[in-house]
Length: 211
Image 1 (cartoon, helix red, strand yellow):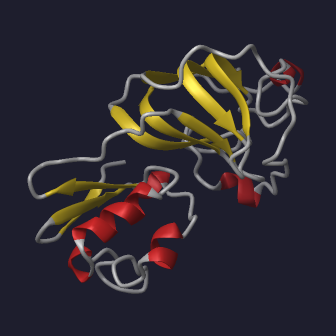
Image 2 (cartoon, rainbow, N blue to C red):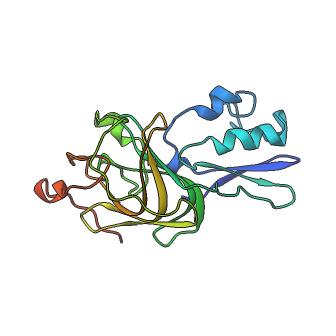
């Protein structure tokens, strides 16, 4: 889906509805700017550019992004971090490339298996009543050596998400589970070692192959 742009004097905000997971962070933090009851629903000039940027950076899915008037865009964090949301997606912040797409700084990745916009979360976990902890104590792969640099996300056909690059994996409240250089994350919803894949996708005949 093409991003829609909302331009202000000092900053432009772009929005991809297909990526939104309805966390409502934007409205709760800056309702003068981000109000779905208004038209347009994003009005960047109703706050400082600094405040708008701070809120956009807190959008977990990357549905919101910004561009300053001088062309400056959001820089990735120094540490790539993957957080496990309670009953919800995997949220990855860093220097991220999903499949063959452009570099991104924030993505929400489906782990319930129901999204119609795989590998991205589209909020289908709510309708599916997906229930799983955001504070797991899984068996983890060996720790990797680093935390920064580029990260690539790919779907294994009918299988897990392959995360290739240095990533710190955390619970939803920030407790570190592991630091990896490569990991295979469950995206069928059935693994008994969430958030990691344990091969359960084969038993439930999970089907999804990249186009």
